[in-house]
Amino acid sequence: MSMHIDARPGEIAERIVLVGDPYRAKHIAENYLDNAVLVNDKRAAFCYTGTYEGIRVSVMAVGMGNPSMLIYATELFRDYGVKIAVRAGTSGGYVPGMKKFDIVLAQATSTTSGINDNRFNGYFAPIADFGLLCKANEIAKQLGLRTYTGNVVCNDRIYRDENYKSKMWQQYGILASEMEGTALYTAAAEFGAKALMTIGIILNITVDEEGVEHFDDAPDNEPVRTVDDLIKLALLTAVNAE
Image (cartoon, rainbow, N blue to C red; front, side, top):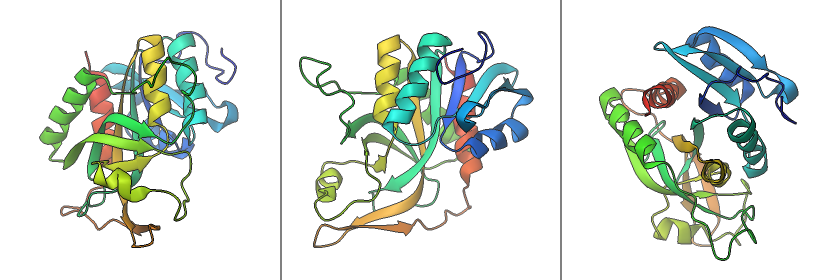
């Protein structure tokens, strides 16, 4: 056991899919995993371990925001020997024309977070594992998913005012705004693990002339895509990674 996870040694697989919502973890376990067993429910951070396509894999809820992700990712990598972590999350997109559950493969994370301040003699750039990124891109094409690959911004605030410089992120090619990537990629680097974020777009972010952000529901894809397309991509990436 670790401070925040009650699973016993060996109960969490070396390959894991991370989600924010505990009921999304439950949905994945009940609908995708064979022989799923609940191995942690402390603080409602539900973690299930089973198999997918014959490969042992876990799925765990880690909450929202960098601090929560950093706690769980650290303990999973450090204390439970997790080697491969794929996040299946949702976010708002900056690219005009993005539709619901278009998928962003987060190659790197810019951030407004201070979790890495004063840890380095410079600025650390949190990035995805290249092998996982390539594997997810390959699988997404096989599934017929529309993907965007590049940089995202990892924010500590979800609700922002006119003082937040959204136009700059968009101008510099940022694809989406999310809240956990910097912590996930930093923890993976620290403990020698591999990590990737697969992000389903659910909102479009636009910025008015005063610099204020507006969140609007993304239009449906045709054919309609759902969170289950994101889940399949994350699971297939996790179990097929080398």
